[in-house]
Length: 444
Image (cartoon, rainbow, N blue to C red):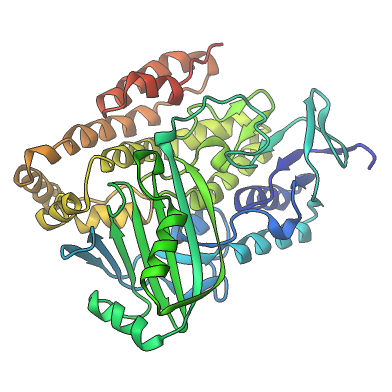
């Protein structure tokens, strides 16, 4: 392959990378999309919940069947403390169960239609001033996007995460071998087909067993932190299937380690920008980075097309979403101290309200009126003292929102801002050792 010149080279053709390539090509930029596997193997290969607003912000059409499974948006959502009985039921969540195989294929197809050069089964062998060297040839460019995932190309150095900040998630769609028994299981758990039952805190505080029955198919989503001595997401699925004979053969699914940390406080280094899991753009309280990756992809393309600047993307992301995602990490860390029974108590008391749970599931800040704030304040005073570690988390989260909105325009002002970030995370309960991983020193 002869060396060609591109405005942007995107490494990684999963949902974030393909969305970025598409958004940039819509501006008329010359873009190459590089993938180490075949394109039909890129990205997530399972079902993932993605908030509707993320598609809107990314400039993408919301998914329709069969990309959106079931009736499209979530049905009723049942959040259960442990295996019950305490629960909170929410209707009409603005979130879709998305078949990620089909979403990635849609984004790749549209990118190719808009003129993106598609290069698969190629890996990066060197990155230099002139561009990117790959096993398929030289790609000349000034700007590179690393959307290759947490374990991907690693075009920028990064601090390792502690094993306690790695979530082992898994998802499978399986046949129903006994429809009557499957229906009886949902009715026993006060739910109907199409509803989602989310048993929380069943393998440590940061864990879920998320179930949905749709026709003759049964979806199982799990996640946990195995370093806490708990079962992994994959092991949770195996156990559930073994204990419930009405679940039949596997249709599709997959598993992945998800990094749980505040998004990288500097997503740009020289001519390289981090996108998606590569930059830890994961909503930790939900354990998903798909929606974040789509939104960030649009921000990055806007910055390159309008300002020819990766730094403008970094500033835009941090100011708009950095505080939200850092706060979600504090809540995720706090949840690890809870049991399923504790979560049930917080649901019953109102400390975990419908507004806060809805916001978590749609990856947004909760919209709380005076009545909501008053009710949550009273609820916190009613929960046992051992659970009141939530108070500093809430306080630090409010401070983080303000701090991120002041993210510096100039890189030279970044060290002082990072020192403030360390203080807020420490006030939210993050140890100094973890701070060194999440907020590495940046100078110049």
